[in-house]
Length: 480
Image (cartoon, one colour):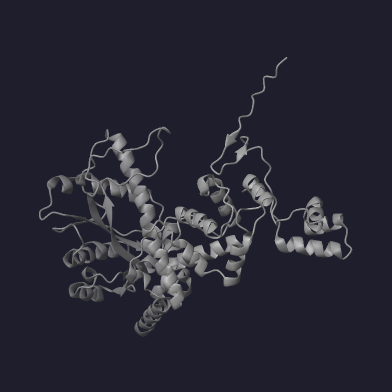
């Protein structure tokens, strides 16, 4: 009687490997043991300790210790050898780290193309399909190097990139001296008296995230009724304990339409601003501080004085604003120029989460309203709903802590993210400029950057190496 079991189908992956489909759920996970622990166990065995006792003492399986002691595997890890040796991959890793610190992060296509060019340059056998590393090689490389992760790079202007740790620490010292001179140390120690304010733009038709569609659909469109660039400026003030003061929404009108004022949130202290461009102006900020923020502070019985951190934009530091704040006890402290990506809590910990929540609120609103256009008159009520649903306490606490503003601690700032901290020799600077050029030259010149960081003896050894044909064939079949 013929068996009714299905016949496995042989497939070929992106790197040209023939294999049967695997069920990852049923596959046993390979456990990795600390290298130092393995070495200590093997040292004890070679000094007379039995395998069983060493297994119990160092908590490593007996069979693993036997295989390691007898050098069963040629390479350190189980499985087939990799295309690039561990020392070669480590050089790649350091190259990735170096360019990342210099402000030129390496992308997946750049890494793959660099490996391809490297194999050509060194005349190394290339077993990849079409000579290009595929998905399995890339995933294997990332699994072997857990200290590398995939992130979305944010654009950083040159002025921000030039900010140094020395400049930030000097700013903290100036603030600390000012606080001591004014005898207001207690304000820095009270989270209900430390604030940060900044404005940001909210799009009426925010871009969608990834969506679910049929596999054969090449292009995906999201129907919107608004101009995709239509947005409104909102000024937010965040307290160190997570409370958001009454915000200000700025509309681009000379005279405010009645359909907006009729739907605007009432009884909650929200400010309604206007300017010809819809942007923040000195007059608009003055009206916010005098008619919105200060009344909110009084209504909530906030002990004065307070500290308000804000960026040094000209609209924030006009003479009328400074005089009024001095009179009522609002201490304005301007953040270090071009450093708000590190020192401003709203930028560091709130705006991204708030924008994500805003996308979801707009999507839900349009579904409930038959995909109707979100009008400016509907903006403020929907934003209030979005803010009311957002849990800001933990986000604000983490943001103020990471910025070193509460608790006041200059050591809390993530100086490792500063591009200007990278010290460069003239040779390194030339190499980094080569890395920039390769973006426009399909990354061919990445190989020069890679070779520039190789030891000359190691590079010569790679070039002179003659790999036997049998060994090459083995690698072609058993690649990772």
